[in-house]
Length: 497
Image 1: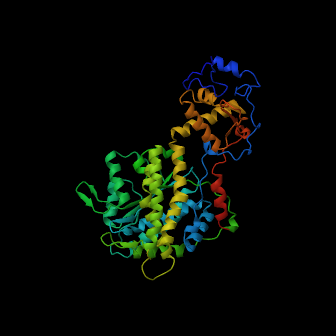
Image 2: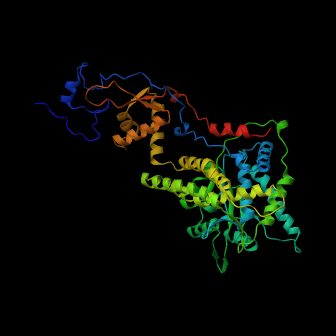
Image 3: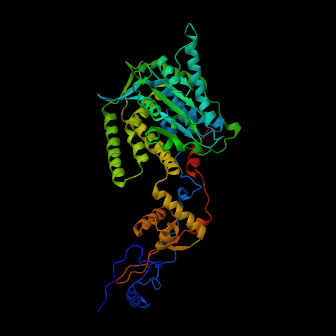
């Protein structure tokens, strides 16, 4: 009588060295000439991965962060592209910070006084919430100051034109809700709150205050005491070190509305190669935008035309499919919340980019309609730049359980210095039985895609299953964080000089 192998639970898997094997099965497999697999006699096809080792994805190393793209300067119109590059080169700051500050300036001037009309019942105000993320002395403050000075000059010019020397401001720095509400009441188009000292005041605000701040992103009514502001439009530009970001990104409602920039330090630009930025022309261009924007009751409308609607439909269809897939995969809620704001954010970005393009052309008619080209620019900026930056931060600050497990295994592999490992070793020793066999497989497949491990393939016999073993990339023990190498390379190609 041939005894059939019993069904074992996942703590007794005989696929690899660490499992427990049925004694009768073990006897049959003890002969090296057997056509059945036996872990001790199974022969790998080769002693290393067939295709060789690729680059290790350093995102799985605790001290590293995933590479993110540099700001796509080609999406800016020619004058602003040069101005941003020249300004960044003169400051030694990432061009990302300068470009982000420029977008914030336009949204601060627009607010509820300009909107993107997508359909009869869909219009988006030109309000953006942005966060410049980086270590201290990474160039955030000087980059912001280069644009802040232009807005401050415009506010001063308006004040000089009034009899009492006071006029509505576009730029505010006070963080109290009451002070910002006063500024919006005076300037009904809205304001931009410009801060380079963190966001504790927002992340740590009481629930009631946070819900009131959320009204500002959509330019909705705000009731504050006995006052009511019909269009409370407030753009935000905040500078944040990574160690002060956790409070913001752990709140889905807040983090989903922010556009994050987390660039690497740029390569050095020789002082003699730096070109002076044309600040006077930049000021004149922003002045044209300020004069063209209207009041909330009758805003400057940037209407998406038929070609633009077709391009927008293509983006929305793809986004809807992705959101369904994210729901089925039960992906982290923060990513899903951020993706869910993509519809409105793309429209706003397209509108801001159109105003920048119009501003450098000089006096003329109002800004044109948003066609396919303008919508595609907004889609590219959101999809190819802001999205990878946001997800890199989310994974770093609020990693999913799968990310945490993968990093835990990498730490264990580096500590043990193994050249080869079994799935059961990973499950039992690295993950301490917190996953079943299938869960350990998923972690290993994830690390295989990251170039850290590679599954061992065995000669195929007539019956049985091969051991579940994995090669470990020998470079893992010596690989250090390369920081944001992908961004550094892109940035250097766009640096001035």
